[in-house]
Length: 73
Image (cartoon, rainbow, N blue to C red; front, side, top):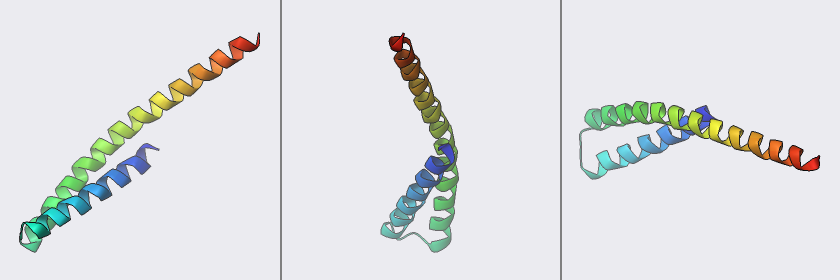
């Protein structure tokens, strides 16, 4: 899940930075380098936040299951 989140977030960041480069009439090399740096940064952030989200969801599911299992008794 974290890897999927990281890929999606970095793709959105790349597209956004590319459009920003086009709208600001930047040269191609500068806009591409900027987009790649932002892509790498957001990929790392996506991995971290995706892993945090995965752990939160798993912990919530475990707690809900334990609560349900205890209510059966």
